[in-house]
Length: 399
Ligand SMILES: Cc1ncc(COP(=O)(O)O)c(C=O)c1O
Image 1 (cartoon, rainbow, N blue to C red):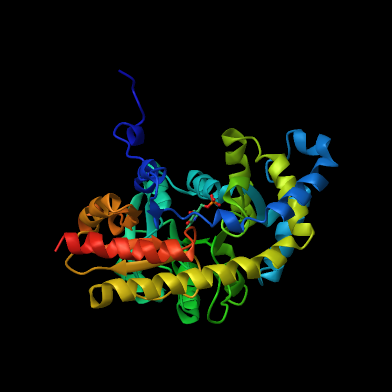
Image 2: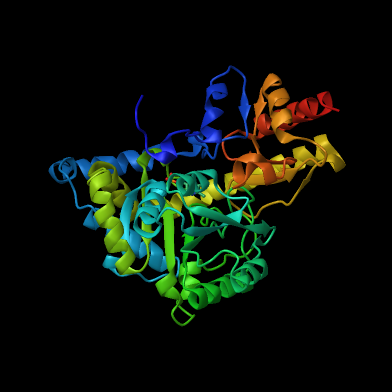
């Protein structure tokens, strides 16, 4: 009856959000969503920040600048500098979650039919955004050290993907694999971006959540040392995983010509992100509360990650393969010989959930069916152990 635009004629929603309906079932243990632990939210610190923000209520109840409240931008620039990436005000904009930044960037850079590169497995909301933009998705495989840059180089040299507009990656504690891109690969990737003139989209919501190993510089920070590379990196970051996703505070840092256009794109999307939550976030950051909060959550996630990895080994032994991540929220596992979608149906019967690997592949037909993503962030350690026992029962029921 309605003449919908082509991406919306037969749309499919997020496969992860489809699972939400089971979350409310009594007794369900979920390894599914990328939800931070709500009992670790710094409610006190945020309440104090909100109190301080309300002292200037008139400012934050009014519409704000599209690129973000000046006070928040100042804090973001300070935070980025502490993370090793100096940015000018014109190179930064606040967004309604980093997810919005990706959407704006695609509006600005990608025409229907344009080739876009992505690591694979990849964050599903990015794949969905690419599809809605009618981009031609070209997947580059990732392993335990992140995107395989040698394969990317051969692909680019072969000309098989045409001239891609951009490459999407989560180089630090990836969603879904938990993998971190090794420094040599970071440098090689940036060199390829300069040579082949494509934008590297660095999505970095998890980089601060390191509980083991030595920190690495972001692609944005690394780009400062490579001639011309800063012109080709757009970096997304967010308070969602390190403070609270309900704030919907994220940001973009990149070349000013790109940021300026994203600000114009945002004008028609939401005029501005909520000045109220931006002001709360600015007060929170200005008080140094993030620096105090981060060690608490990283320690807790380190314990949970170790608990999940130990419980999976204990319950599933040789049947399960995975690499233990050094940070983030996810364990990417394989159960060779098993279809994880079938396993999920049995697992829901046992009251445990995870995300089958298929959701993270550009072409579901070419997906690794044996793969699954488990998030250890939200459940407590007892629930993690019980969840692994239930996983074993669901696994054995299918043998
Ligand atoms: C890789 C990645 N990028 C972006 C997002 C969205 O973050 P935000 O809440 O800042 O929009 C998520 C959330 O799960 C994510 O995992």
